[in-house]
Length: 113
Length: 111
View 1 (tube, rainbow over the protein chains, first blue to last red):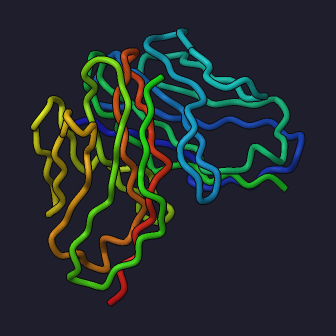
View 2: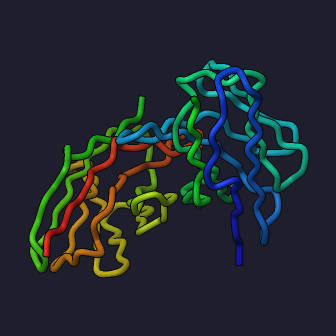
């Protein structure tokens, strides 16, 4: 069966520091991968998605970036965090094709001080 | 563009009450429809799905029917429990295979 791992679970970072969140998927090949952000009490905002190694689509301009160095690895990064980057970050995967559901990791709660 | 509209929360019910959370959508083509659930502090879990008109998705006592004529996918459960307290998201796949999300509905079940 497929599993998705996301870490760390919680992170407290000072403003201006760098960020690296990692997500890996097991049990499937060539998944579509996604990064979402969820502000407190709000819905989901798609940040990035990837349909293959090195292929990244950005949905929202911001100081975050994403990379996919391996087929089942998706990394969310920032060179300098802003206060507004606080939130709950979720990684997800899906199979390619129509009508496929997305499957989520447990999330990373990021607090910027 | 495609969109999903959910009823605003929070929805507060007593245990064993009947639940309906409304979801309507606008979409070109024939999207697949989903309900996800998010328990406090956790990621989202797929609750149920329907891929074509008149399909009924069901799981853990929850049901939703894909109604093309009313562009709706309302979530129902006959008797809710305290453990059902969570945020529920309705979503559809658009023509680019991305998920379009509703804003979420917080459900609070009181014993």
